[in-house]
Amino acid sequence: MSESTELSRPGRGTARALSALLFGTGTLHFVVPKFYDALIPPQLPGSARAWTLGSGVAEFAVATAVAVPRTRRLGSLLAILLFIGVFPGNLKMADDWVRSSKPLPLKAGAILRLPLQIPMILVARKVYRQAA
Image (tube, rainbow, N blue to C red; front, top):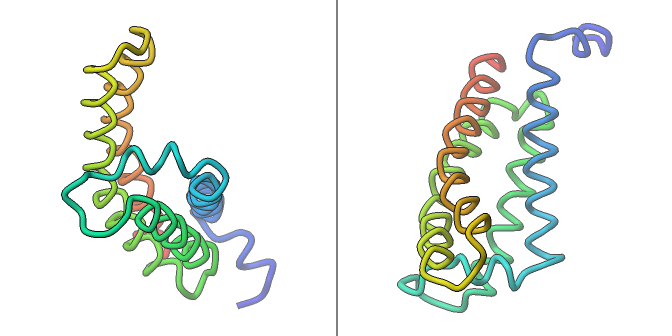
């Protein structure tokens, strides 16, 4: 496939956006790991930092797979699984923040952020279908 054909393929912008989101969040795992450490459910074995850094690496790998046309379909499927896999951490954050002395807008934000996993999963599903 020529470069001009690849640039005109449907869904390329959506795939780029998904890849950029994953690269960005993966980067944050290394830049502000303490924030992510607090999201790790204590029931998981090992240290929270290991899970934080491992999930950052996973996000880089999935972002790369989504960015490359040859692996985009697999990458978008892995993105769906990743978004489902990190949901318990989002639930933990919402629970922790609601029980904390944080200001009400932060508590509300932690709760309102939970349904955002759905559109992220739907975007990854769209990329998956367009990569077929």
